Length: 170
Image 1 (cartoon, rainbow, N blue to C red):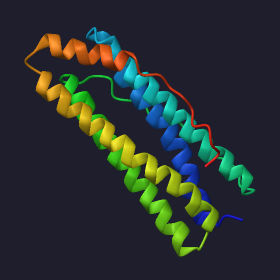
Image 2: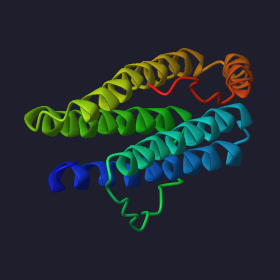
Image 3: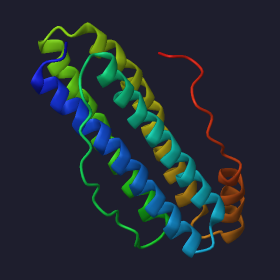
Image 4: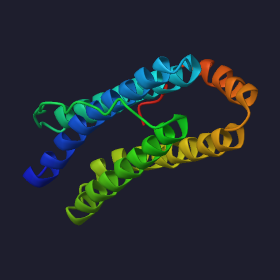
């Protein structure tokens, strides 16, 4: 059984993952508004991933005989300076997600809640990939910044991204 403290943090994370999906949908909207539909697709897929993450926490809470508490979701930011700013904001958001997961992992470790530690290891490994993806795209955008053809090639590359849910229960 989960402690009250751990359950609260896991519930907060369910809500934060849903909020993250909303944040990325706002970023997709911005990209669509500046005619970068491939970049918008990247963020739509990112939004789908975040909802998957929310449901992974949701299911876990119930598997551990807890109850999920859904909260009101804050409206996301939808106006950005430019495409670099969107991705830098997304990168910063992923760093916040990582710090939140570390905090929950610290609590689970203190409480010797090994099942939760196992779950969180999956998310922590996922965050290495998430932060690297954003950082890599930021570098590519900055290199393409003064070259519209290169920016549109990157837009085409991101248009091909599709969401594929993980096939394992890990």
